[in-house]
Amino acid sequence: MKKIPFLSQSMIFLGITLILVGIGWGVWSRLHRPPEPQITEAGAVVLAVTVAPPTPTPIPAAEPSPPPTIPPTVAPSDAAPTPDLLPAWTVPPDTPTPHPTAFRPTPTATPSPTPWLPAEQPPTRIVAPAIGLDAPVVPMGWAMVDRDGVMKAEWEVPANAAGWHMNSALPGHGGNVVLSGHHNIKGKVFRYVVDLNPGDEIFLYVGDTVYPYIVTEKYILKEAGMPLHVRRKNAQWIMPTDDERLTLVTCWPYEWPGNSHRVIVVAHPPEYWQSLIPPGSR
Image: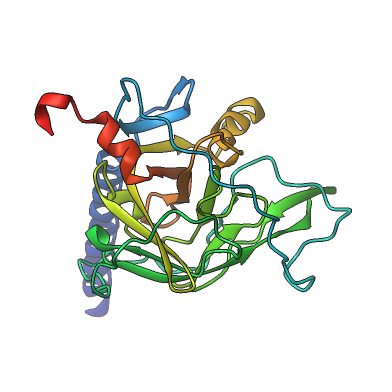
């Protein structure tokens, strides 16, 4: 008979604990909930950090060169349509909540840029000193995936490396070089890409040749739950361009389940960045 009060007290204590945990989780979720996106020309923008160019200095057109030969083993089927949306990342429901860390790997010494020669092969390495990023780059294709009975072409983002979109430009060819990478799973190579800001340097390697870029724009775009026309507007950032640029794509936020938004970081050659600085400030 003496056990009954003890059990009752235990149940009451457990109930109060669960209530407090629920309240705490609700408060935390509300404080960390992303703001509502605004549909703009840039897409479903939640956060935009950008440098508005006055009259940018034209970038000299690179000499035309033949496209690279990609081994058949990494190229998708010719019959498969090219994806027209941003990569779709998901985290399995049983994945434990990741814990952010302040640790950032130390990259090698800042490389010495080389002249803008058109690359003949895909990029092999990316370094961003401001965020401690130093990772390999591999070609990234796509595959046909069954989504609710409909076959769709989706990007296959590699693990432990950044993926170069095989239908994007090569460095030095005056086009859009697009790289995608995971930020909270499978190596987390783009873990801190969201922390890049205008003015930060990015160095893209093709073998031993270094191509320097400087961040000029950053956007966080709402992707999950947005209508198709908005997601296609978001995908404009991975489309071909007439100017030389590097575009990095990853997900946000970091906390599980996360990945409801896409982070877009755009970088241009140093000459373009210099053109944004007012003459009196140079």
